[in-house]
Image 1 (cartoon, rainbow, N blue to C red):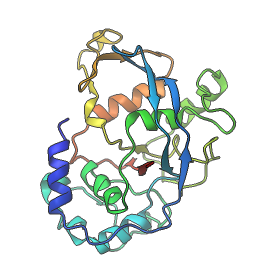
Image 2: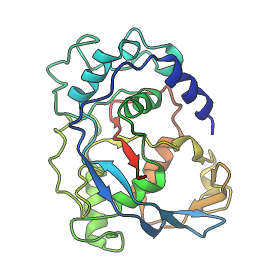
Image 3: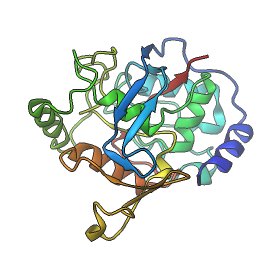
Length: 259
């Protein structure tokens, strides 16, 4: 994976001083097997996810501000350029002050994969894997897998159709799913730990073929569920990113493995 070595360097060079706030509010996501929208050659799309803990909502501006105050190497203007491009946290007024349009309870955006990983690591956590994110995001308020429900799909697509330049809402405004997790859809895109493993072909004519997507060490995969357009959008967007890249609608949440 192209980020693994750099991640090791980053977490040892950044000088993490303190962990993140204890109010990060994790919930248990019981494990299970589900059919991924990505068709893995070796499993035909079936993915086993072990039980894990996931943050109820994405990391907020207030939480990330607390992190950079305690860890100066991750402040805007001090972060090593290889770990974050120049627009890193550009929506804040100063490196240590939010702006009027960047409120405390909005999800933090304009953060690189490296910065998101460092935040989670500082709290004894990590970014969720793609499988964990997709597994959690398949649930609604009463079902662990609501993806076969046309009404649920229409609602998800409706969220994704909103203009990307609309002001961000505070976290925790959407209904919790069956696990108690909120905002997996309709608020921000989210980094995953293994995002760099998903490589999308530049030739759209390859869609559905076995070389459409490739996964490190797992053989060829392809979109197995063409109707799940929201997942396709996520995969395409994440696979186009480099670890130092940032966007104004990409945030993150942390996960924890169980003992």
